[in-house]
Image 1: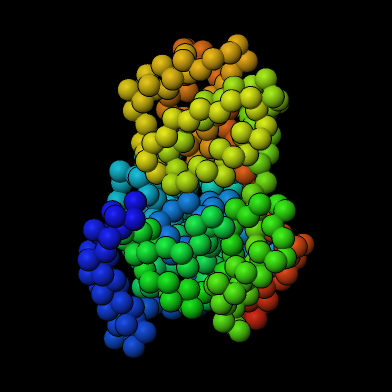
Image 2 (image 1 turned 180 degrees about the vertical axis):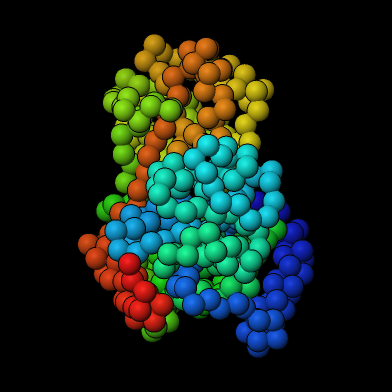
Length: 358
């Protein structure tokens, strides 16, 4: 692995020059970021995928939905369509992306939009939903064409951006110093027993600026439920064997959680945002057949479930028991209220929400 990084380091150097030049142009206002009246909250990361952005966006929706009409905007990774599109409940993941589909199904009354060109997509949202008072930008920390009012930067506890390298030698999309653009930094996927000493060490490593707040958060895994039937829960115990099928950037946290709850976990992994095909289902059927024991099930993430919907009848016909594992954000140190207050303080001081609050 170290040898591969060394070989790829010249390419990472060239990539870094291009990213630095682009950021320099934005910092010097030679390239102009569009600023909107409506409050824009960005959630993103420096690494490529796997920091928990989807459950974090859901956390913010639950937090803000009772107080402000809001909308979400994503690029819609993995979709076969292009341009701006408002999600409908019957839209498949192939048309809008798995994460927007998940948001729409979980929060049907929240406008969910996809669009590569965010400066054009935001006015489209406001045109279709003029009552919108907050827009959440999913995975848009690097997309500097829009100036956010509040940036939340996520970094994985087991893969801190401070320990990574630029693509392709590492997984960083831009240099480590880019963290300085964030207003809030959240170390995600922390173990629940993360002690004060280690938190202090991480804080010293990241070195947040005086104006930045740093939080630690873990993941809460709920009760698994049958694909397409949330009313059918699954009880896990130490006699259960699981085949975990995922197409996400980093399934490590979920694997560790399941291994602590069941007898055996085997994995069938695909690339992030993988659009499943029928031959993938055949591979799933074969792998499940090889899994030992009588008490066994297939588990997947809620994001993967969005891409499995078209195969619901096929899975039922072949009697493959597929269950989804829900997950939610949980702040450590009882800091949830402090984080929430940071978000509300931004919105309460914003002239747009202050004058037009619903």
